[in-house]
Image 1 (cartoon, rainbow, N blue to C red):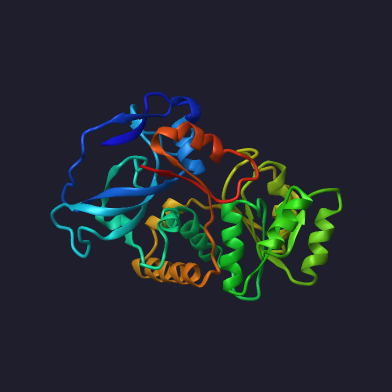
Image 2: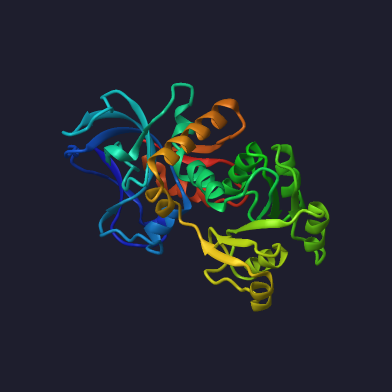
Length: 325
């Protein structure tokens, strides 16, 4: 089979290539998938660079999420049959024609969901839904997030709206406000000019901001903290600008604020099975009803992986870049 491999850590556009590898056989409690599509996520690229929380041994394969068809089943596997279409995430090495996955790490995909959507069903959408659940916000509450125009930002806004939660989004440019409004996502403020925090306060009115999600780091973390209500919670989800959070001790002390991190894989692994089933049911319903959208930017063959990486890193991109074996 063909698979994407790298022999050193570095720039994914330079170190990734396609190689021929033996076709693997599933062990007990494993299944083999014939991969249909696989998205390129930021954490996949960080792993190739050697800068993520997980650092594989070299030479290493790449990619962590895919949709595929079960084509072989190991012993001690129940409820998953050959020919079933499933999605998987957290399964390392999916940028390939075939991949081995733990039976417990695959999710059957309903017939009404297209392959291109199913390929990106878990990592970002389920993480976004798990994040909203993790925040503990309820209908009528107000939350704040930066990078509102990113994939997770859009998903959080759509998911929260379906639960009656109001999301105030922050972006860097005014044209991004218009683009999100056109996508049906209101209540977005561009951080242009010194008065943008006041514009957020005017938009919120008397409602307290209970929670803020920070995907930027640096001074942006402190800006979110400053807008939180007393007793509010600041959640670190990413670090696009800096791996350090610059926070005011005064805001922390006088607001009695809570600061904590969110890592989707850790939250998911600790999640109760009944909660996981309920959230997937909610996710399928949101996608089926059209209230949650998962656009695709472009699709590339495995041999075009370096161009696919460049496309994935293009600023202003809307939708995921997918690989197709």
